[in-house]
Length: 408
Image 1 (cartoon, helix red, strand yellow):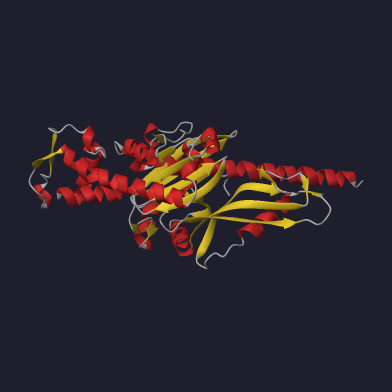
Image 2 (tube, rainbow, N blue to C red):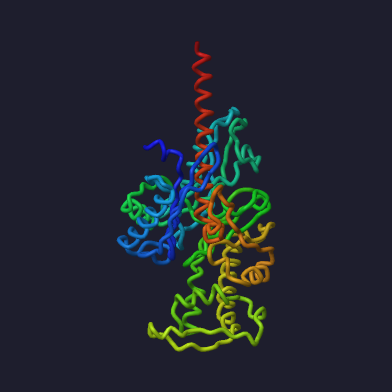
């Protein structure tokens, strides 16, 4: 590998609307922005790849733009995975270590996790994340790292985030066709959480809802660990399509109207407000006409309440609806819709806020928006994972050094 690219981290967020490739440089333990490329997504439908050729071309163009801005070749990438095919499940398992107490080692922890993960997964499911919630040592719970403790029986409560194997392979294949080697995959909901949530929120209990184009990824944290993950089959495009049908305009114009005049609280719009829609006769559209601005809200509010009701029911079924001491955080492009927080606080009965990603050093201001939370979070998650692995390897080297030093 080129020494100049060894300290680069590249991530790819392949959504239904856009492909975003983001490059950062790791310098003295600090992540610095190097470049990014954004390309309209083609060959994508409902969060999965429907046509490899166009999807690969979009990824290639985004990667080439990122390379140009970063002034460095991109060889590997971390890929975000989202969409309705992603599911989460909680499981539990462990091991007995005999009648005599012994010190828990890292290998014991791995063995306990391996036993817990051996749940009946369908043949077409791949595991994205193995997320320990807590360890139980001789009936003592609430342990986050049991290494070095002494006991007879070690159990682990685990959350598995899984995805469709074929959908994952399609993303990897497209990246490969664009000349990129996929080094890791991350559930986009967990990535977004990395960029917008505080440690206090994770401890108190919080739900993050990453509203993408075609789906909404949910992750609930409680006492610092992931308690629940899910994906709702509703995203920002559903709001746009509702407007396009209700106003008899193109999807492109409906998107502009949603961004400029949209709200999902009818009573927040003055009754006499009117806006101009249509008027694109060159493309065979309707002549310009005036409509009440409230009419947009009358279309958007029911869809917002449908999405939030689905969110509430999902959390209730997962047993985590009462675990949101810090409330609900909305991020992703769909979180920009005016009035969404009012509806959320009314239906969920918890505080709600918009989640903006933590800005990287030297990052352009246009990326500090909710729609880039998942991409920025993937960089932060990858960096943290690399630091942890390096720390574990360093600890192992020190132990081996001490063993060999003691043998002389």
